[in-house]
Length: 290
Image (cartoon, rainbow, N blue to C red; front, side, top):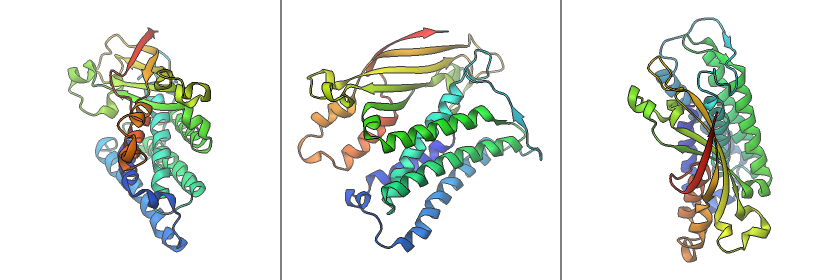
């Protein structure tokens, strides 16, 4: 999941002036170095992170695979890793699309570059895992990556889907991480909850209804007691979440960002963060353990 580091770099493009994001580069020849620079920068960042975090034990010299299962109770992370692969590929594709637009690509080309770069980097990480001493290539992870990229393309090409659905991550450091001294949020599966929010603001009949337009239905998935651990899992189980939350983007748009701030860099950046990250304690949720 080191792609999250690259996502942060891509997110920086959101704070460029709005006219930069709106215009394609009038000199296409400049894209011949701009696009490879963005792709190379993301690849180098993830490669550096992986070399120091995942592959520091070296490589085996042969390609090895593993059947990890999907969301089964007896899998090593209960499926939280699969949800994470889909989420990070999805988020990476959408943020990189904004990044490629920022350097001058038209909308269609930016989407193709963003989706293929995110999927390519995540798949590349998986292939390198197959040669590493510590990990193995997982077909389930590769399929989850592809699903995340496909969802990103759908959301980018259909404004109705984008207005209706958000795919978010809620993270709070888990007791498991504290117990074993894990400080990396990407490795703290017990602290991650992946949420799909269905926003009333994306439904025309509800968009102008007072109060209701600020609400959203949420369904989510997380695991507890799998990873991280100190060699023994502590009550491993999976959870399906459901509840009602607050659409902070719409609420802030109608309050803080009314008047002169509306549509500016501050709102654009805030909306992007809120589209992919869930703010704690902004929803009433229950869950079913299984």
